[in-house]
Length: 411
Ligand SMILES: *Cc1c(COP(=O)(O)O)cnc(C)c1O
Image (cartoon, rainbow, N blue to C red; front, side, top):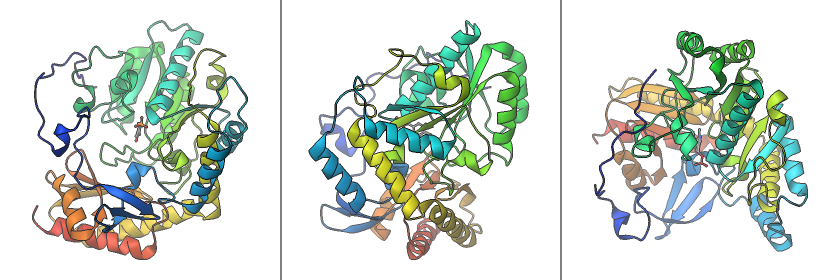
């Protein structure tokens, strides 16, 4: 168990040198200077009209590609009809989307918010309610080393990155942390906290951490362990879900059924939406007035969410992601594994990470300049590839060639 002080110090007055610092924006990001004005499918164009291949998809958001005609059409139609009423009135598109999502996931009920953090926050509040129901006064939720669950106060407490947590203490102290993929550590934490533990929250694949995949059978073992101990198994599928890994949801590779699943990012292909799905006892823990959201589940986003599901189904994108993912991983392994700079190639489907032996943030800019290519770098030394699920066979080859070129050169 790692102990990160919840009151760790923060150097006030430290300045950050980045290009946007003269803008009237809070300095929460340090963006590259390029600015995109248009997108179509797997491509985006910058202000100079230069075309780029997008292997980031807004970090697993625009899974069906930019400006998909079907999405553009339903946004226009629904904007013309009705964008917002209130959750105090019945919203048909919300019922429709909830129905479709419960069918796809095997879950029973859905709460709609506007982001991944909100979806996870709802999951955490379910864990608190569950604790109350069980009469546990100081509940604990097991989380993982290197986890990322969002930026709300509870979710930075659940997350395990100093940059996310530092300077925001005191944090929520419900969380106990164990190494990802380690069943002995799970047993140890179970012994130590016993009946205080009410839930376990985990990403089936840790995206921000560098696309870390657990050993085969790990999720199944977690399922068994949670059932045996009466904990809720809560899966954060915000990045790994919606077809990205070659299954609708990553947990489906192991055929398990969680108690709570959170979804966001790709659910409306770029419109803000988050969903917390629950089954069994967790499905009935919220009661009228106990949780809510002004924007959550509005007719516009929910209709777009339904259209996204239609497109993924009609275009066979889950299978396509599996096939293109296998192709991409094969190409990368063939071309890169002999390079000294490459320490590991990880992931499933179109969520892949290439861990290098030194910091490689600068490759994001170099990929733009040399290859007209968008890539992501996470945890300083891992290239993360999350192209739109519609990426073609030829584009996968182009992408692998470009990555090979980028890594083979000095940077
Ligand atoms: C992006 C992400 C979140 C946070 O989602 P937001 O919409 O930024 O709040 C949480 N968990 C995982 C695994 C994510 O990838």
